[in-house]
View (cartoon, rainbow, N blue to C red):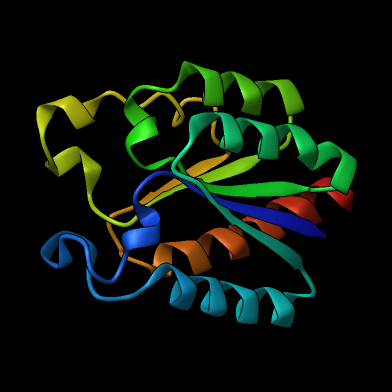
Length: 148
């Protein structure tokens, strides 16, 4: 099984940005933890972060050619604005788990619009960096159900 984990804008600043909301864990620490769990589950995982919408779309488009079976995606601020990333996910027809570190529903009103949850295989929100680990486990479960 192959999984691509995509993180959107400003998530490269985890560990230093708004620690009261996002905590002190860095993106690298999250990737290390997910990579370790993926290894235990026999999953090959690719990591990608970009602050640029077009780069995220290109990476999503590349997934079928890489044999990717599932995505973990935290679109960051694009959650509320990017029809283009949503369309890219629909184009490739690869299941994804949407992850958010904070409880988005309890935040500012402009964050209440979510362009991904209705097309996601699942959404994990508000449990911090551990949400990414749960996402890799959920994708493994979905993959096994689909292939058996």
